[in-house]
Amino acid sequence: MSETTNPPARHVALLIDADNVSIDVVEQAVAQLLAEHGALHVRRAYGTAEHVAKHQAAFKRLGIRPMVNLAAGKNSTDIALAVDAIDLMIAERPDVIAIASSDSDFAPLVTRLREKGCRVVGLGQAGKTGDETQAVYDAYSVLTHRKGAAGTPAKKAKAAAHKSAKPAPKSAAESDAKPAAKDGAKDAAKAAGGAAAPAAKKAAPSRRGAAAKSAADVPTSPSPAGRADPGDRLARILAALPELERGETVELRVAAERLREAGLIGRNGSSTKAFGGFPDRFELLPAKNPNKVRLRG
Image (cartoon, rainbow, N blue to C red; front, side):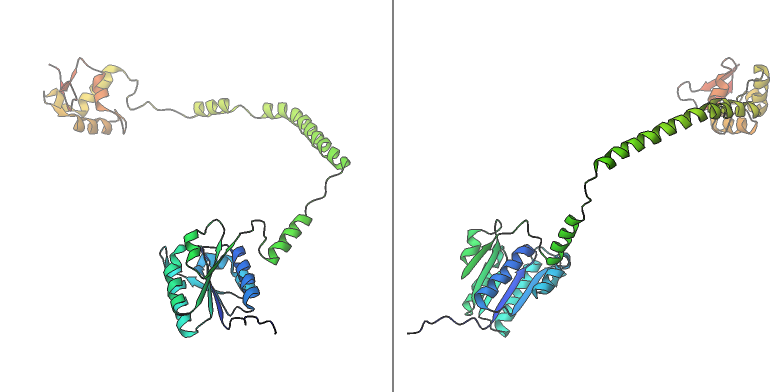
């Protein structure tokens, strides 16, 4: 009596939640399904544009069709995968649908596919898959992410090239020559600097001396407040504000404008200070927070 074996599945589909499992786990999933079923007809990876772009070289090498999810939302990638799984179930009638994900949210999808007569297997990443996720599938494989795996041949070649390109260790002569050259250059610079310093110091005056000399050369004019004779200054204030001599009260705002026009205070000068220089002649009203001035009787 000849031994009978189960024939390979006629149609196998792999749907990958690329936002949930690493590319290393995806590679292991493809290899395992090919070994078990001899064929893997549908290979699709669902993920954001960032994930798809990051792993596009691996997807191309593994023959996986990327399904870019441009929709916003926490579960939008899962929904896109579930919609395609139902569509495949109705249109293609696969014998086996494999879902590579550690997400427990696919439990309703797995139940519905199994009710339609399809065998549903799961493949998840170790450390991310709970027992309740595994129980709903017909079979489930937990794959360990290999942290040391380079991922692609290109990466392995790049790593090997980088390793071989490390500079050779320096010889003892080279190691001794570098400090010697450095010390020699330092001594030469120190000698040159020592010779040039007195000449430079003699040729260039100090900044303070230059600034003082420039300031002395510029003619100065008396400030608006001036240092003129107090009697002359008082006469100029009264000439600018004749209302005061008539016994009138003048607002400080108006007084300040007149004093500026007469050159008695600066643009930002205070009329209060100008009148304060003659407390026996001018009275500021009110005493607290004054806004007017008058001539004392």
